Length: 546
Figure 1 (tube, rainbow, N blue to C red):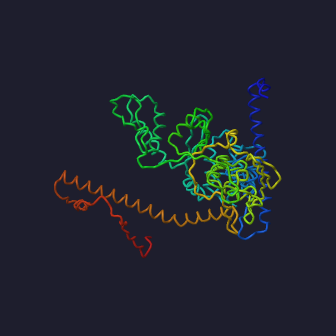
Figure 2 (figure 1 turned 90 degrees about the horizontal axis):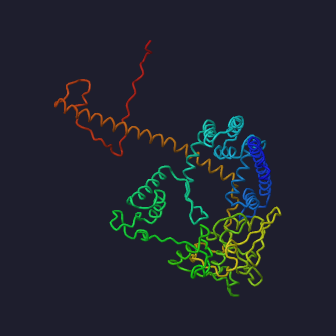
């Protein structure tokens, strides 16, 4: 395909890019329409299903998200976004969906409109915004992302100003910091924080980076990156100039422990040869990914080592809870949740019996062994137990899933992929108990719990009610702060004039126009309970002035 396209001229290549971009939009619209239709079907089935008091309920949204995650190999969160986008185009923004299906707009624009109008709950207002934006999208060709965001926000602000205010508050509540693994032994740090916090963090890194002397061989960017480690450990950044008389020398600061006594626990999965000898096989750092053998040995030099032993005695196999060694082995073998597309770490997952444990007669089946245990996050543990997903586990840990619609998906343990020949010898550095019972049954949801749409509508209603109640309080506080500011400025002005009177005249003023200048100086700090004086309004005349 690439060879055949090289013969085309530039104009035809650009035309091909435009046409395929339009086709991509049409395909995205078709996929989201299919997701929306599936959601309608699953929601109708969930509403018609028999309710069993005391048992968890899987609503239509969760059912649809699980099938979309498996079909598209997505995480639960990503699949939930896909279903939410499809639901928004189907029920809230049909005009936008029609434009996307015709290829008259792209998915980037559609997604921005969906996300920026998410907090508009009034059906009349969202219909008006949908119609208005659909009429204007044709003129947005070549617009930047920020320009589209500004146009959508302007339309929302005109139609529903409360939604714009809630979006800002929601953004503040959704602040986070995350770590992303790279393939070269490094990691990306990203997130969303308040602008003031970001500036403070940025300046603090620069301050630490500039504490070293001019002979330090590192660039400013390298010193800022190293300053992050120093900041997290509560120490200063050590200079690397190597000079004995360096004014910024701080001793052995690079290896000094944290001054607050904090200890950080990290989990590593590797082989005994890599850890103890000179093996070159990589290791796996929990929460990050693969690391090379030298990093494994450097971490193992100061780490506590726990051997994961998958061997289970006949007596232990008849117990519901696995031994600590078996639990460590299963978590090291799986590394993540075993549901298709899910990447939640095994350390926060439940241990699930693929064949249910028989509490009345343990010998009848469902043994607590490595071949019958797997890691499932709480959401997918509930999905298997109550959501009509069926699973079969093979001896090597492979799990074969069958969805409610009959599709088949296969997942293999991530640890077995990394260490296929030495799986029984996995050597993790894991804390003994992550704090959750390893094989607890899924916690049932409250009977009669409202669906996702109802919970979302209730949450937005509460937020708006709180905003309406808080708005007059905030306005009164702003007026008081403004009055205090003006009072302090007025007192400073009057004191300044009194000082000038003393300097230039040396005697009290005899002018009848500003007698206050002869009063004593006023304090320029107000007490906490200060309130502005209420000035009486002039009475209305008895008769009009004409």
